Image (cartoon, rainbow, N blue to C red; front, top):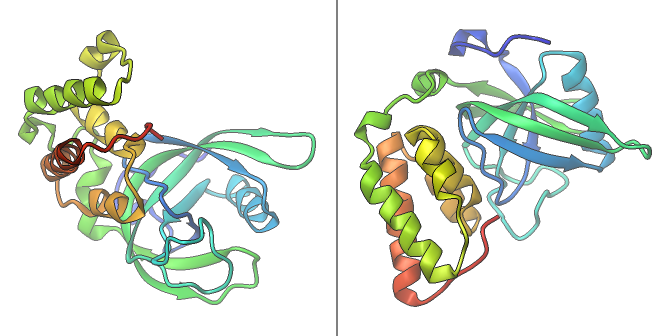
Length: 219
């Protein structure tokens, strides 16, 4: 299996693009995906035959989950690495993507493949390659208090023993990924400049939703 990229220079300049509305991937976090469309089956086949890297990115128009054609894409996405895959009898894939680093989409490149491809630049996100980077700046006590408040508010059972044993960076990123917010909010969380800013943004979103009296299941 190809090694996980350790710095921006390890990344290929052009990667497959997987436009998917509402799907947030963050560095060192994991996202399962069911792949069934022919264009994305082709993409997974190509990734497995190569470096296993895929650029998960949201379309600007969130009305369609995974739009066809050349719909506009957000400028920032997250590169994922396939760490696990299973094939079904009818040609579909179940894959797990591990977040590598965020990237800026420089431009979309013409491609003869069914899936889209783009030139990317991850230099601005070099810290994403360092596990747990910035977690010392997060107010973990405040963040966990927000989790407790929301769990009580939404009547959600959480495994507090597991939460206590989870590192701060992993906890913040996981909560952002499963948070019950829309595509626009997920993009804001993705583009937060630091882990501390991401944690504070999620706290603010959650406090606002609780103040409004809204609750939704975790994704």
